View: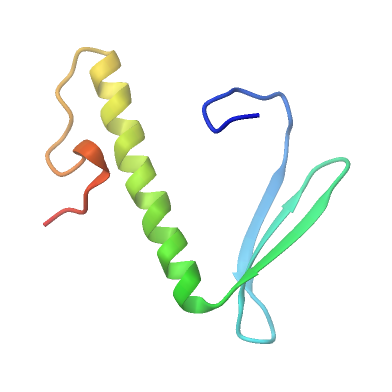
Length: 80
């Protein structure tokens, strides 16, 4: 399975702090429970990657509809 391939797998995602000062992503499907712990700095880096991916996805969707992307959303770069 690649990142750009659709799937019928449904999952629940929970995000929150642990008692040890970590940030946990908890992913659960009918068959798997997957806790992923990150230190706060790693969690912030991941959050930045999510935001960059969201900007790229919006730009791609706008291009697909023949619209120009909103300023600051192209190529996944940070807004300046």
